[in-house]
Structure formats: C-alpha cells, structure tokens
Image (cartoon, rainbow, N blue to C red; front, side, top):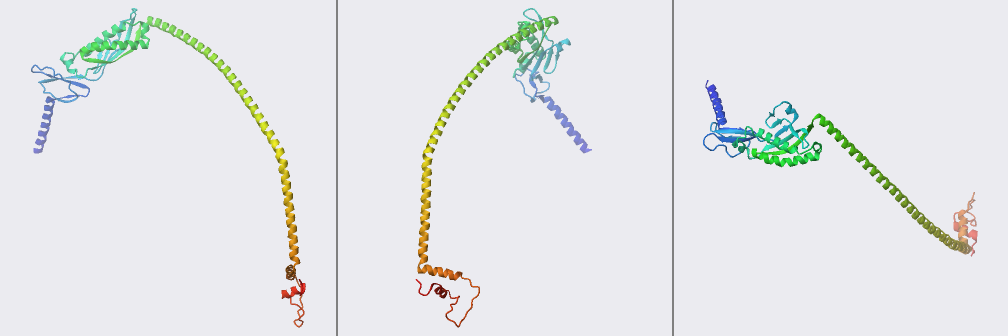
Length: 362
C-alpha cells in the first residue's frame, strides 16, 4: 500500500506543479504576438510585444492577449460575395468584390487581394487602442474605401492594360500605407486579380478590343511588308555587291594567273637554254674523261703485262714457272730404280726443277 500512496503523491505533486505552471506562465505560439495586461492597478497594457515562448504572468492578476503575427490575406472576390457575408479565418479575410463606377460612369466589379501584417513591436498598441477585436474589419473597410476611390479614376479600357493597372497599384500603395498605419498594420502587396463588366458592356468592350487587335494586326502586317521591302532591297544590293566583288576577284585571279604563267614560261625557257648550253659541255667532258680512263686502264694493263713478262723471263721467273709446272705435274705411274742415280726422284722437287730448267740455266 505504501508504494501506491507514494505514487499517488507524486502524481498529485505533478498535477499541482502543472496547475501552478499554467497559472504562473503563458505559452505563446510561434505565429503569435503576446500582449500582457495588468488587471489590478493603473499599469494597464504593458508596452511590449512578447515573442514566442513561455512568459511570466499570474492568472487573475495578468491577462494575456494573443495576436496573429503572420501575413494577413484580405481578398475581395466574387466567390465570397455570392454568400452574402464576409468570412474570416485566422489570417485570411474574404469580402465581396469591389463594386465601383469608372470615370465614364460604367459599373465594374473588381477582385483584389491585399496582404498586410501587424507592424513589428506594435501589437500592444492594437490592444491599448481597443482594435483587438475589430482591427481586421477596420482594415477591410479602409482598403475598400481607398481602392474604390482610386479605381474609379480609370476608364474600362484602362483595366485591360497591364501597365496601367500596375501603375495604379503603385499609386494606391502609399495611400494604403498611410491610412492603415492608424490600425498599426502595414500593407505588403496589392494585386488586382479580375475585372468584370455588365454582360452587354462586356460584349461591346470585347468588340472594341477585337477592333483594336485587328488594327494592331493590320499595322503589324504593314510593318512586315515594309520590312520585307527593306529586306528585298538589301538582298538585291547584297547580290549586286557580291557579283561585283566576285568579278573583281576573278579579274585579279586571272591577272595573277597570267603573271604566274609568264614567269613560269620564262623560267622554263631559261632552264632549256641553260640545259642546251651546259649539257653538251658536260657530255663532252664525260666522254673525254671516259676515254682518258679507258686509255689509263689500257696503259696500266700493258704495263702490267710488260712487267709480268719481264719478271717471268728472268731466272727467278723461270724457276717460278718451272716450280709451278713441277707442282702441277701428274704421273699415272712412276718406275723407281734406286740403283740408277741418274733418275731423279719425283719427291725431290728441287732436283726435278733442275732437270726441267737445266743445271746452268739463267
């Protein structure tokens, strides 16, 4: 039982702590602005915007006001106007479209979207000035009045011109900033989303737009024709210039080719003259040198034969011839008689030489 009592005590303390925390601290979400108001004394609303997180505040003594710090979307459109009343969400407002009359007294319905935010650091001023519950309605009413006045300056044709619409939005934006500053908010964007006229006037306007477009188309066709004419003229001039340039370059090419042919012909003629002059001398010199070479060879061969004959006619030459003859002798059979000393031995080459050339030969 004791553990159960201890557990119950812990749970009770935890719950008590949570209650105390809830009564002493206020949680502000990331998309909110916290404003603290003292319920006792004369301090009233604290001149401070509290950031997201937990902040000190005693329940019963302090009161917290939470504002949306995100971008607010204020939309005037036909979809919200069909329901007959305005719709509001956390950061979105839907209002009926703006019904205005143009400067030429034509009714027109306009869809517009305006985005705005609470001026940083001014959330407590909204609470102090008593705008917390109705600042969105006041902003919507102010925007409607400003845009009705500014859009009424246009004529129907201006609404279909994007540049004119953007210029009007740029002119209306500073006015919105000045008027909405009273409620401590500032506009961020102004977008004219759609424009609608009466069906009968829409048909007239569309017919007028069609006429204007046809006129612009005809103008564009004329511009195209004029451009084609200019292009045709430039093309012809270019062709003429190209032909003239081509003829000039052909002329220069022919002249250069003729000059080169003359130079080549002169060079070939000089080459032929040089060939006719040099080749005979070269041929004669060649024949002379060949003849002299042959004569020198013949003289050398004759001298060789003469010297050879003289060498062979000497004793040594005869000995050499005899020796060569002895060495080249071939005997089919040899009869040896060792008892007859007058018979030379074929083995003794010197004795055989003496036999062949004689003992007293020169």
